[in-house]
Image (tube, rainbow, N blue to C red; front, side, top):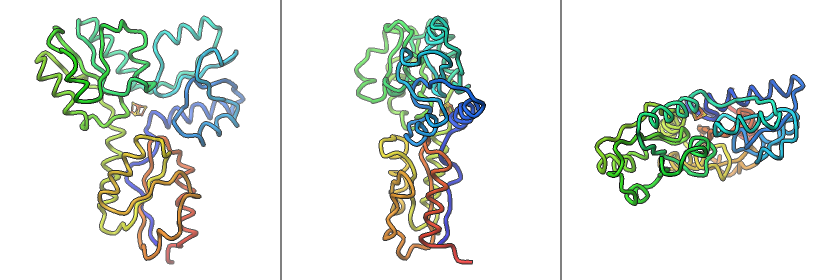
Amino acid sequence: MKIKRAAKYGFCSGVRVADLTVKRFAKGGGRGAILGQVVHNERVVEEMARLGVRTVHAMDEVGDGVIVFSAHGVPPSFHARARERGLEILDTTCKFVYDIHRESQHAQQDGAHLVFIGDPNHREVVGYTHDLDPTTYHIVHTVEGARAVDWSRYPKITVFYQTTLNAEEYEDVVRVIEAANPNTSRADTICYATKENQDAARELAGDPEVRLVLVVGGKHSANTRHLHDICARSKPSYLVQGAEDIDPAWLAGVTCVGITAGASTPDYVIDEVERRLQALAPTPA
Ligand code: SF4
């Protein structure tokens, strides 16, 4: 049986750099706590804890030492709070996330009302909005939500996207705002990491040689489920959290399996899945 991986899958560059930075820090003897998960993946959280960098959900839980800010960033005020508490900061915020912090600040100084397309509870979006006056921005992610606001009352509007979204899928939402206020512009800060994984998954599932697709990732990970939906439109597809989830019955008569993975899936979990597939149905010599 042949195995093909998608051209792009798994960690985005920002999460990959953050993961490596924290591991290097821990392997060098560093000890501390990560505020929020590096990625939404329990295996990664456990691995970090084993290395001596546990995950906490509030700054008060850190104690002393080093606090790690993850790739999705934190509100600017958290830096000051950490320093006040005498904590050292290991900042792994992705440079694209910092671009949005900077651009949104400039847009606001320029008199624009800010719109963030995204999930209000996602840490990245909390990072952008936590320190702002609530009257100066909106967070929207549905057409209904966009229709519920009178956008014409703002002299100008700048739209930003949560980086873990595929901006194309929110076109309808942004069009509602643009139709209501012609003085609306979109910030040029889109990160294409999610779109690239989705496009590559679509291509993999559309490959005529591929008969079955395994999507590796957390069952609660929205972007993993989305990849599964994309693949299932073309081929039988299964979402697996790890090698142990593979049912050998799926492989009966299958000559080529495609593999892709959600943005929170570490490489070693994907490798385990591939090894398990090879063990169940070895590639012919
Ligand atoms: S999705 Fe893009 S912006 Fe967000 S952490 Fe990954 S690379 Fe950075």
